[in-house]
Length: 209
Image 1 (spheres, rainbow, N blue to C red):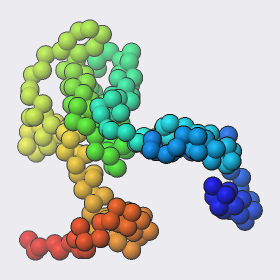
Image 2 (image 1 turned 180 degrees about the vertical axis):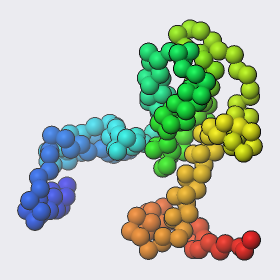
Image 3 (image 1 turned 180 degrees about the horizontal axis):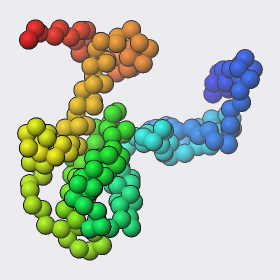
């Protein structure tokens, strides 16, 4: 903690910036001695917390991930629809709103996080009900199966994405970057921190068509 404070002081002196102690928190694992953790936090002047909360809109996880961990995504989708009467919009308007707004809400988190299936199913259920006109207790009638309307327009669907597949595609993009961008600092940090050397390929060869 002394080295950490000295490093921060040196950074502040060189950059002209200041660290907001009131907004700085410190977290220790559950196996760390509680009294010692509190003593270190007091020495640094930081606030000791049991949960670091969110960083850039993504929860910093310390416990087992459940559907409740990402309940906030479901709440965001529901809050966007609060007070909005689905029946006042045309079917085309509801589909456009679902594509541009509702399905975009979990996209940012899905770029770095594998969401539980229950969360994806719950969001898709809300979107499905909205598209078919369910609002304020009234229930719309599904005219076409979700598996059909969630296919591409060329295949006869409406182009709505299946969130589980979208989540997988976004994470595969991160995996792709971990392989081809091996000279970047963030890739090197992850590779060494989690001992991935030898566990993932060093390059990807694209076969000819």
